[in-house]
Length: 351
Image (cartoon, rainbow, N blue to C red; front, side, top):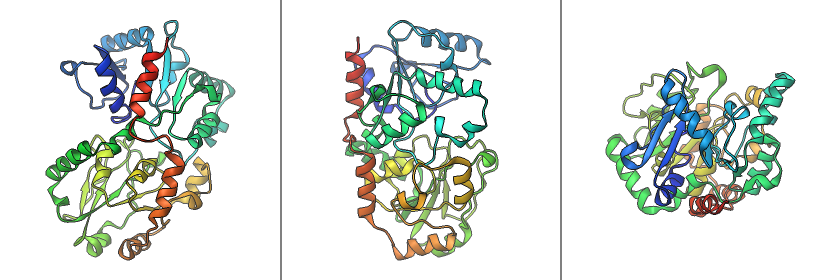
């Protein structure tokens, strides 16, 4: 049961080696192989009644249910005896609070809070890449340490497969030829609740184009939750890659990452490349969402609040890669390219 394209890629590959059929069920369309490659895809959507019923049947009869997000239906779904729900989650680390620690929880009714906990109680195992993330999950989900699998995050295995990295880089250069010959800046902001249908880039793209376009190209990837993309126009300097299905592939061609409260830095740190943090609405976001640690202190790169400051950092190359390495070691101690193998071994050996 998935919300994101790339959460379980490696897991499916490994399971497909050991099982004759894999069923993927999700609430919104995501790009996965169809029946001809051994996958059976069903939509858990009432407007597709047959597939909706089939999805519920497979959920109720499966031995292992793999999920990557919060799904409210878990609070009322009955699984077969001995079935396990494995939570992969969709992030390797966390900056903003979520789950039971989300500030919005305080505004919900007691009944709603109990419903949230019933969902979290259905997580038999939660996959983690660090003890730090395990502690965050414990607070967010209200779970004991016995629920956690320290296998590493399967989606990070990609960064240890040089052959596939080379392949994806070549594909991206063919698909987006304007990248060739220039360094790549990737801007990947997280979503704001009030901008899901009309996002504001906040960057002065025209000024950046005038200053940086000779040496750089800017890729913009909006969060998957954003349903309507912003029209971007700045000659051949800006390329909207929001529709590209796998952000990890984009990271391989990225020389500098610009983001804010997204979880992307936890994966990008594995490449040991520069990052810039652009939390232009820091005070508002912190008040509404809350952070696990003081924002500026935890970020592994320069924190800027204007486009001018951002361009200055890029022009002066004001980066400390040792800071990135320390950040990576803190959040990725179980990450070594073998996470999917360890997880599928766990699934296979379970009674």
